[in-house]
Amino acid sequence: MSRNAVTFVHIRRCDIFGNLVNFGGVTVAVTADGDGCKYAIARCHDSDRYVKQAGRVKAAGRLNAKAPGTVAKYVRTLAMSPEAFINCLHQVGGAGLVLK
View (cartoon, rainbow, N blue to C red):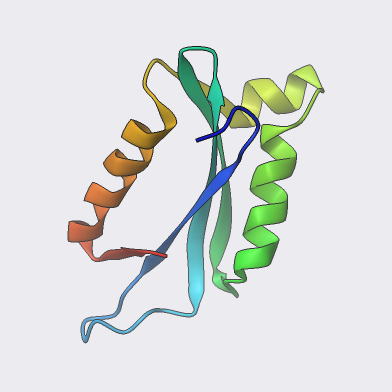
């Protein structure tokens, strides 16, 4: 992953038949930060239709925010590579969630 690249992971729920649910979901924006990574999350409420582009915009805006309140509330830093964190997110797939 290049220094300024942002990778997005979309997490969606499935119904009991394995079909994607159109409402609710999470978008995670991940980027390299020193020796680790930082990430921000945008959550779509369960009663709202999930739109990937809206999640990307919100998560990236939080990730790139300069306001201390926004950073403190939404941005987290991890001591692992972005690739390792994304691999961890993909392990969530076994819990009835789909990563797109």
